[in-house]
Length: 318
Ligand code: BMA
Image 1: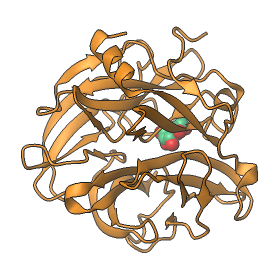
Image 2: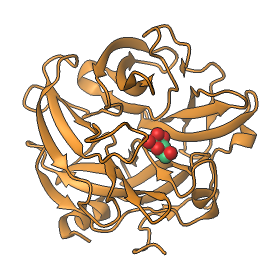
Image 3: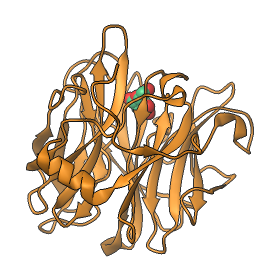
Image 4: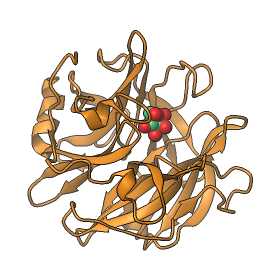
């Protein structure tokens, strides 16, 4: 049984996206979307879609004006045979999207590489989600999910990373969250450890980042945590608050998760007992935090909470 109660409210109409309703061919999985809210209030999701009979996923853009009803673009933004990084494009999933006002564009970071090369990270730039311009490979093995902060801090680009600390990614390797800085988005250094696995009871194996959200009290960082249970892994979602000026400094950490697998669509599917997110969006007027998350690597769901309450819970360590 879960140790705490999930603190987010699940949308009554979950799942929002089911593989069987995917409009462009038969899909076995539609899951773990990249997510961002545009300056004019549209919600953009980058859905990871696994077509039936195929081994590798594609990413399709879905967009909405109310955060609930989405239109899916037919042409994928990323597919496994993109030619941007020949021989290394592979299984595009888990996109992290950052709206970066100063550069007037969205940055997308997504995994590449394979079991042989090890997983790496590709950086892209887009203005419209119709095309994405490849920039560079910005992380070497095994580090596939850097998350870019939405502004420069003290004149530098900053990101959170999740390199594996031991073993290959698909083995029982530990993983912690690190931070690094760059003058140009390409060259990264000044690495700092931010959050260790085991920082709370429900993430004793790994923790992994999402794109940070600026609040008045600190950077809200929604992260995923993996708990090694007796015979399986359990993926949950939690929250930590980082210092605005010095984001390697943790100033608040929720002891409980925000969300853990409890419903059938989170407990049963291609990979059981998974709630997984690559980000979150905030509706600025209501201060609602919306997390579009994958359930059991099979479907996409929505859960919401109040931004300010979650920040307070981080500060109180609830
Ligand atoms: C992680 C990611 C997620 C996935 C999770 C559980 O490593 O690849 O896309 O939801 O594993 O399978």
